[in-house]
Amino acid sequence: MDKSSHYFARGNTARGAHFLYKSAFDGLNKIYVLKGPQGTGKSTVIRSLADSLLAKGQHVQCFHSPLRPDELDGLILTEGKIGIVDGRVCEGITQNEAGEIVYMDFGRALEYSHISPEDSEAIDGLKDKLVSAYSKAYETFLTALRIHDEWEKYYIESMDFMKADQIAQGLIQELFAGHENDTPTVGRHLFFGAATPKGAFDFIRSLTAQLERRIFIKGRPGSGKSTLLKKLAAAAEEKGVEVQVFHCGFDPNSLDMLIFPKLGTAIFDSTAPHEYYPDRDGDEILDMYTLTMTPGTDEAYAAELAAIKERYSAKMKEATSSLAEAEAIDSQIKAYYVAAVDFSIVEELQRQLQSEFNELISKQLLK
Image 1: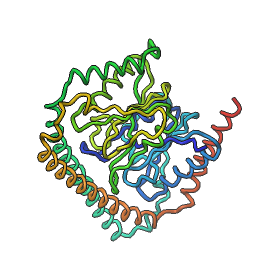
Image 2 (image 1 turned 45 degrees about the horizontal axis):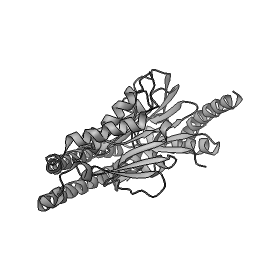
Image 3 (image 1 turned 60 degrees about the horizontal axis):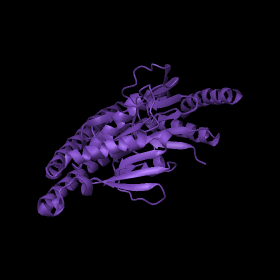
Image 4 (image 1 turned 120 degrees about the vertical axis):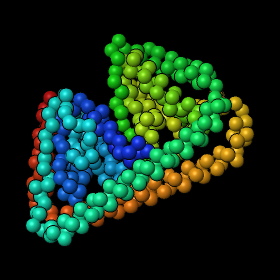
């Protein structure tokens, strides 16, 4: 059985580049931060380490790149409490309260003599282009978010807030009764998905596969889904219930899912672009639209809502194409560096990491 969990801990969002590594990597005994530009083998080494750890039956948490979701930005060896992360993306990890941080310089593998002055000039030009492609994506996502706010207004005006609060209080009672603890907990903050150059991408299916109960929240923009999740998360922390808090990859100020590992339960916003439907025992729907909205709201504003939706979709498409542009530019920069890398040095760094992990695992097995 594949003992891996898959997340994102950075996102390209309407609030700019957003990082959750500080929370995701909190409490580890050791964090290896791999330094060096793109193309110096960091992601490849992280992937091959993940594969070898999984082959040994270890549980591995994989952190994916929002620019290329099939590549890894980092991993955590769960039982050993050790993390590895690409230094270019781990904003927020400046100190590790629980343990040490070890920096490994993959930039050592670059033979700068193989990069001509013309190449250097081309790389600098591409770096500027990369910054502006990202800026354009973030600005366009922000425009889309403002349009989304217009969309929400129609529903917020039809919302029964007292009813929404009763739903929240009822769920708090039902989920946490009998599981309270005197010591409050701190939620672990992650992303289950990301805006990528190919559109929205998520790991909801794999993250909830082993859970007994899944609550699918349905509703419209502004029907209180994120607010409900925020209330549940705060109550879980206060009552000492372990909680994983998943932020929205489009607007990180919003929440999209909570997982309560000890309760075997997930509750998540199951609307586009991560729309799922119950398909097994233990799945249920919580429809905030029918429970909290004035009936007929959709119909009353059908024309206005359709126009807003169209503008929103167009902006999301535009932002996604800016991310695709960023990915293409990043690949060009990468190609210059790959051509100048001495891969025997990368292999040496990989062996060093591999042996430290092997040593740790054998110590664990001897316990």
